[in-house]
Length: 287
Image (cartoon, rainbow, N blue to C red; front, side, top):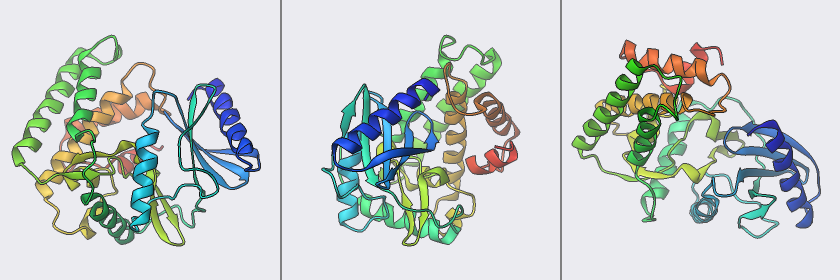
């Protein structure tokens, strides 16, 4: 979010908390992208804020409630208020339990175990949800439209569009079993707590093979996850790189150093295997 929107979003979240009898006279920004993540104090509430219409917060709240009830490793909602989406000043706000991180790094074996547990719980659900290929379609639309990605060179536009289309076909042709996934279980959506890793940001849920989720995690994690199809994982890692590359070249993208990252993603796709994970690419580029 732009700084002006951040100020308004913080005001909306704190005023909602106060109206719900949660003392909130301070707010720390934990993460700022298309959504804002805040720690409200002294009530110690984790607030997620998005512009109304740019979120699927009701779906996320309902899904989180159902998965916490069966022991899935997801961040629980704030128990002192009704579990719903609150709106104010054009922002949609959801309130969650603040879980104090005990480590900035989650061991690969613990990460894999938590993701396997999450997948097991999600496998039981048959909820209307987008398919992972919808994300590919969104990325293809950005690449195909020079108005939406004006700084992307024509040659790279052809290359990236072709790679997205080819990978979609290759993954579909494998006919892998699909289920409900987290969608983006990268390290930024994992909190290492005293009770083990917990996942946040369930708005990204989609249906697809588990390898699509595994394509978002650090390289060592899939080594501890059972029955991974390595060929499918490689294709999913490529498609994640290609999709994120498209979004980094989109006009108005607010990702920090987004253009630098977009150039790095294109280089990685041109260079070929072994395919880097997103966290490794971040580290390589000094982010």
